[in-house]
Length: 192
Image (tube, rainbow, N blue to C red):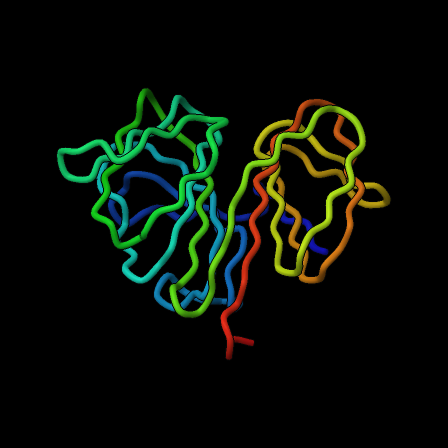
């Protein structure tokens, strides 16, 4: 079990200057954008523009802050994403452009390389109180909204993450309505 604080992840500016990204997790450790098996990041989208092209990569995207994004495929509407919407799964090789509905947007991005790994990213809504959550190995829990306290462990604040490499049952204490982004990774046969 490992806590990842967003504030401890240094930002890197996009090549096109349209935003910045904080990488929360990458496998294998030290992997680049060309060599990751899976990767999780949070991005600040400062301007409209095309999505980076990731052929052979499956992606999931959720909006954390701002009014949201309209995704365009050429002249056609592909999807509209707003805070609180379920994560959108799509092919990273699609020629998509993102148009902000108004002002800056912060998003949560999961990527897995096809043939090496896959992922499932879901939004979990938890009411204030105590909850039992069974998690599989290679699961990331990200606090999209609210704050969660793990029994016997440190507090996870808004936009902090918990990385679990082993199967576990967690007791979560939520002080208020909380939205978790629950991402499970599966390595394909032959991957360490």
